[in-house]
Length: 249
Ligand code: PEP
Image 1 (cartoon, protein in one colour):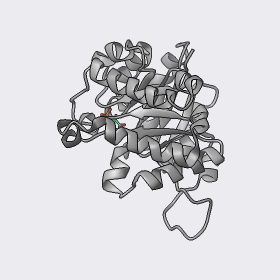
Image 2 (tube, helix red, strand yellow):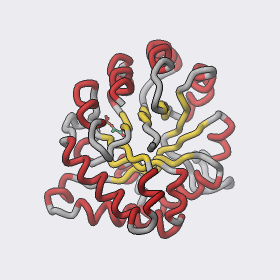
Image 3 (cartoon, helix red, strand yellow):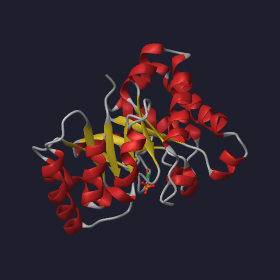
Image 4 (cartoon, helix red, strand yellow):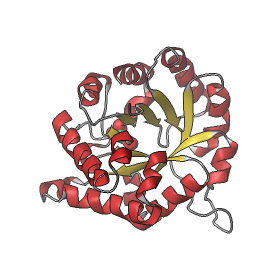
């Protein structure tokens, strides 16, 4: 059985009080849900306070990006070991906002993925095409290239300790969701690509869908055979929405 996972990506939202209120509202419900893992990927300054709030619950802590470097003169950067100090289990790498707004490319994303795994963090590797790329019919080519750099540099075996999130850029924060079939098709493509290198790893790989998942569309997305959960942005900030999405998985 593949692991199912719902991870919230809080992006640059929240503050000490809002975070506490949000977690107080969701944790009692999530703790009663069997059969899946749940995580929240929070802004760096709140790792410590959220770590305390998550203690004794089944919700795991994650970060939203990480440096590819161990330590050194990298002003403003945060290392894997620093994230480990606060009990992080997951880290998102290659989110499209990092790629588009902060100049991350397939090479730097792969380096971050490798650094995360070296320090025993589980990378949630985001891949996905833009609207323009989808309209040009090159979705698979784009995803293939994004994944190829990682499997070439880190090896296909590395996927035993990773999660992939398919996030079509045109669906992130836009309210436009991929149809369940559109998402399923890309998930199958990803799994087939990995199957060509290792059937067992492909079979066991958790592949999340992300892009305007809401309480109202989560069940039909998660019902698809190759969608193993979700990476949730906006809806992870609304307690009832996030609880309903976690229930749907
Ligand atoms: C995301 O940021 O990874 C995401 C999927 O955002 P949203 O759910 O808001 O589209």
